[in-house]
Amino acid sequence: MSSTNISLTRFLIEEQRAGRISPDLRLLVEVVARACKSISIAVGKGALGGVLGDAGANGEASINVQGEAQKKLDVLSNEILLEANAWGGHLAGLASEEMDTSHPIPDKYPRGNYLLLFDPLDGSSNIDVNISVGTIFSVLRCPDGVDNPGDEHFLQPGTAQVAAGYCTYGPSTMLVLTVGHGTHAFTLDREVGSFVLTTRGMKIPEETREFAVNVSNQRFWEAPMQAYVGDMLAGKDGPRGKDFNMRWVASMVADVHRILTRGGIFSYPLDSKCAPKGGKLRLMYEANPMSFLVEQAGGAASTGRQRMLDVQPTGLHMRVPVFMGSKAEVETAVRYHAGHDAA
Ligand code: P6P
Image 1 (cartoon, rainbow, N blue to C red):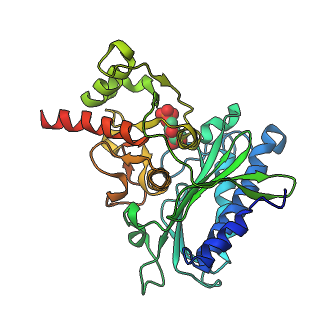
Image 2 (cartoon, rainbow, N blue to C red):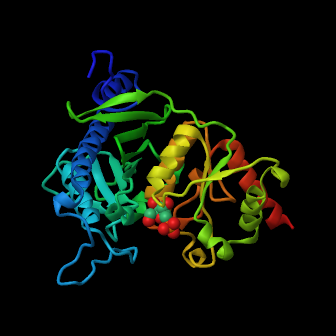
């Protein structure tokens, strides 16, 4: 690592020196980043690490609170994040996609003022086929005077986040982070074992010709989504007047990272299958942290009918429809929904 490289540690110290983060928040981000390095090592071993495949014993699948079969790496990643954050004294409590309720920090450790929410290994169905997966995290303040936080104390809108980020385990391992002053990307220098700042101030192009959606759900979509995607598929001779490209990794971290890097729109809309649950993706530890990162990079994020970060959570595992990415394209998608709703 050359002397001109800025490590994550130096970046966070400079953010703290500028008064943009507290010492405890700096420690929190460092601890999460260190846990992500351990997850990266486990994921990177693949079949050699004995951690591929489904969790569970005696042929019985292990099912999480979402009703999804857990992968061994889901369980391992969750354990790594829980252990790393227990003793530092920076957290009051934490919540995970893999746990049905939130957990206060054990009494034997000191407690801090922050709440951490995470999806320890998003897109884990891709692990066994060696496609990028990632860890997503969101940081909230614990309400004043609350020593023993319960689920209700986590139910804060996305605008209350003080930090958010993800780590993508791809050809390189990258940490993408916001503390409310831009979105910044760090690449893991495996020789040194440090995250190095590789993009200060990511910027999502306002316009795009690339969309990300699972088109196999098309027949289940609401009418405005059918019209929106249909007009894109019509290309330059259609209402949009331009040709579009499509990408769908089925790993939100990978799709959103591409969009943060070169633009695009990511959507997981309501469809008749997931509508009864409110959508597929989870608000608190998928949509909100990703929306914070996207907005800080000049993009937009919506449920299709409301700014994502304004949504008032009603439950720890609340699901929402998601549209995020290039600002002008998200606004177009929202207009299709508004036009339909007004008709
Ligand atoms: P589908 C992964 O399971 C996930 O939660 C996101 O990472 C991803 O964008 C989406 O679901 C993929 O869903 O229905 O295409 O498999």
